[in-house]
Amino acid sequence: MQPWKRNLLFICLAQLATMVGFSTYGSFIPYYLQELGVDSYEAALAWTAAFNSGASTAMMIAAPIWGRLADLHGRKLMLVRATAAGTVLAALMSLVTDPAQLIVIRIAQGALCGTMGAAMTLVATGTPERNLASSLGALQTTQYVGMAIGPMIGGFLADATNYRSVFPMAAAFIGSGLLAIILGVREVRKPKQAVKEDKPKVTIRSAIRIRGIVSGTTMLLIGALASTSFAMAVLVPIIPLYIQVLVTDSDRLATTAGLIASVSAISTAISAMVIGRLADRIGLKRVLVACVVGVAATFVPQALVDNPTQLIMLRIVQGVFVGGILPTANALLAVSTPQEHRGTIFGLTTSMQSGGNALGPIIGAGVASLWGLTSGFYLTAVIFAILATVLQIFVKPNLSRYAKEPSPEI
Image (cartoon, rainbow, N blue to C red; front, side):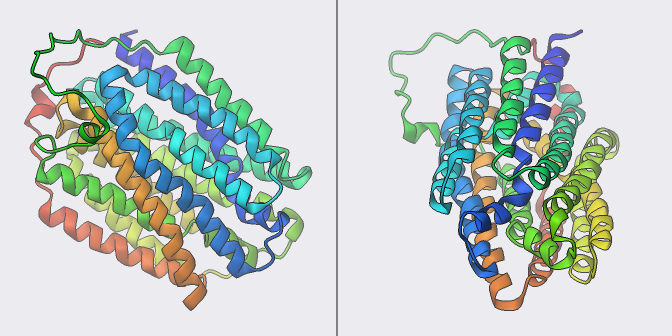
């Protein structure tokens, strides 16, 4: 097996286990907060928004620095660091006694983890250019498979026992991913060139400097990924409470919420693999715009459902289109960036996506408090419609390197 394929295999296995761990508890956090003392829908919306926005804000600040350090000191090292931190912090969530403690741990998780961005960088710098979309699609598929399995396991265990019991199991899954990275991934880095005496010293300020690296198309793609994260995050505090309104059997609440999260992730996982390969053949931009349009069209009907089954079916359709966005956008981003700067650019992208993830829940909670839970679906549909228009008109990728650049020797 070629080295880059071996690395891709082990990174995918690691991300599968890691995403199972992280997603076991995501679907029932509002219910866990209620158990910790939150006593109203409005308060649950606010605390859930803080849970997600706090982590994303911390990640937004930390990601460019981690990305630059990956370029300087190794991408595998950063992935190990992120996964190890995730293992410890997931276990600590089982010990909290009030909502504030949970938020503090979540913020630390945002600052220290970010395994998806670290894995994306490692794959993007070690994969032949012609295989980027399909390889990133494979990585995205395994991540979404993990996100599909995790909520079902976590929801079932939470209903069968209690919410706290889920977090140690989550830590065990993430820890197994850490072992796969340490034992299976071999990063071969190019020898460093001799450093000139007048070369400026690397500082935090220079670590996040992007002048001369980023083109207009690159900035648009980063903005598109950030906008996607923001739009999806609008619904993060809304979906669990929306499910709580639709579900009549409260004893199966966590299981139902986990199932709805899982089926969407399953369709996204399958789609990411299929559409990633399709985009390599028929055009990255064409597929990206089509998927964004498809996502926009699925949100309005979700606001009109009156039972969980209808919501499940629409989330499956939505997942098909969501699965095509990230691999195509990330492939366009990678081929628009020199290899030596991809850690920096993917770190910046992760930061901007985290900014979207931070702002989205706050806006979603505010909109839902003012105009009801369904208003978030309409807002999300409008955002994706605008994004599709901007991508179609303004993104003009130069794909000459996509066909010509030789494969990296790793």
